[in-house]
Length: 183
Image 1: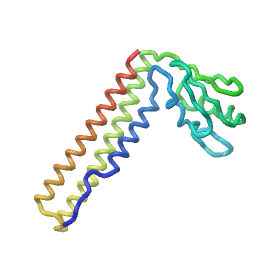
Image 2: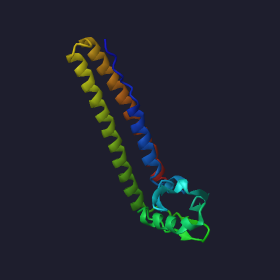
Image 3: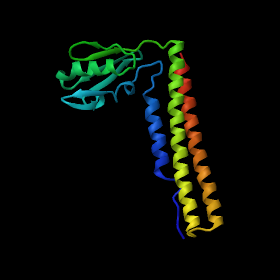
Image 4: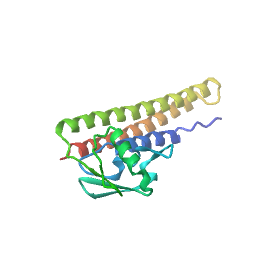
């Protein structure tokens, strides 16, 4: 008898990807996650800021980026401007200060909309994984590797796992939306 793995690591990877995407959506306060994955042209290689500089949030309304290589300061500044996050970095020579302006109601709504797009993308990933596993179950049944009772048992287990991950996605989305909308 064939054993089909229902709780595949792909589900966890989809959820982890969503967490990473949501951490990049800014809320009302400064945190290093807002800029740490912005790619900088560092001597011809696109490198995340996190790998070439220290990032700190001295207060809730600003970030300070200190490149370890002072020659990279200008490139870091260019990458932040090009990132389309709406930040206006201030180059202080040895460091870059990013003032984080308070979010307007309109911008909060845009961020919530963006967040919902990322959440929907995660749900689509979960559905795709479910479909792949479902095909595997049907194939095993067709090849007589599992019985019809096994098929129904696997189908129930699969749906339980999918529901669990969809609940986790909803909880993440609700928390992030509350963060974004809190002034």
